Image (tube, rainbow, N blue to C red; front, side, top):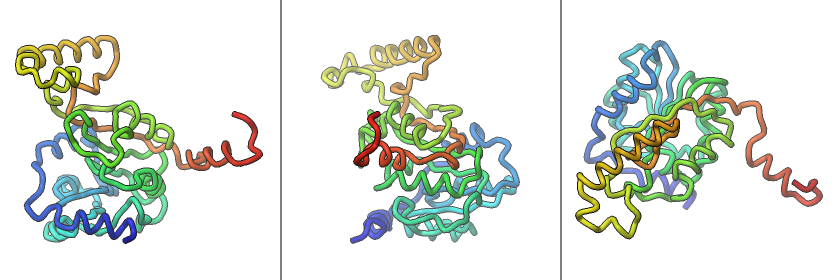
Length: 251
């Protein structure tokens, strides 16, 4: 089977039992897109269309991409245009510089080829326009195709080397309190209690913020606001090929 066939088969019934709550979707709009009005917005991994419906209320022109046929059907029921495809192996069916905003929430970690997907997003998003994307903290137990890529430091570096400028990162909810402990101590009921682990987590978060750092390991989810600065620079793949092909100058 081709990669797109695998992705569409695995996600076919993803939304057959319903969708996700609107709380985080409303928070995302209010936090990152409060003034988004009259824009062209694309959501990658649009699910059942709830986020796009919220943005449509603000007179935005919205479209979605979704690998789940059940999700696309629910979008259609809301009157939202969505296409069923695998963005990690198929080119986005839009011209260059088509969109003012792209949103992708808890989707990039599901993709077999996140590098290609982000290149496609860069292509259809206008220069210096905004991508809002989020990924869960691996410490929450979320399964990953590429677990090392989605640690906070590595994913931040991945975005940056692709030409995205990370403008801000906001957390959503706490990670499980025991995740603040070393792995070997997480089964201890006393150390993992609200009083011990919970207080420790809050203290560490405060210390990190006081020193001007983002305590990423304290949170369940990270949402990035990124500016598209990579449209006119060589891709990391181009750089890799030039640096490693036979006869290239030593680095």
